[in-house]
Image 1: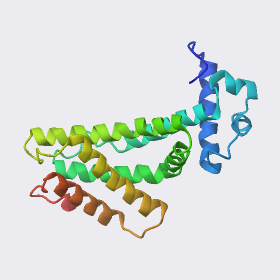
Image 2: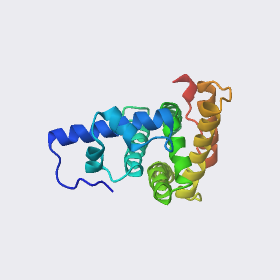
Image 3: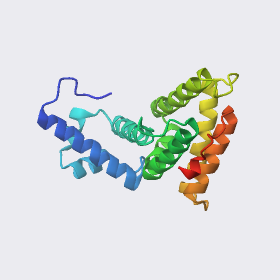
Length: 210
């Protein structure tokens, strides 16, 4: 939990933001296990005592950093209302945006996964953060089912978990492990697999021609 419960002053908000920013930089450079509270304080330019005014531990700070990173990934992968209304094209756009968001944040995401294996609190956080992506995918599938565009027999939640896992695993193999792949070709194939899995076919205008 966060220690500070009273409304923060402008100065307090700046200090807290500086600690979160410093923590993110330190975790990204050195990894969760190697970072000490003193390292974060030195980067933020604050005392050890000041850190504990805002956070009870390194884990609590890391939870906030991880939540911010996943939140940024979620926002970065949202297909806005200005995009094509064609469901196939929107799935394609979402896959492309997700891969790019993963590329920008994969180190911290992997760090959270590794830390979650050892700490129950972080495991719960990881599940909570993944849930926002699962919910979005499930809601999208339900809308397509209601419109008669997707297989009505599919369980929206399980389908979202499985198809989201496909994209996430590919992102890991491609961007983290270095499997050679062209982004355009990868997005196209991921989208074809996703669409066929839910019973959706491309519109008469191919997503490649848009």
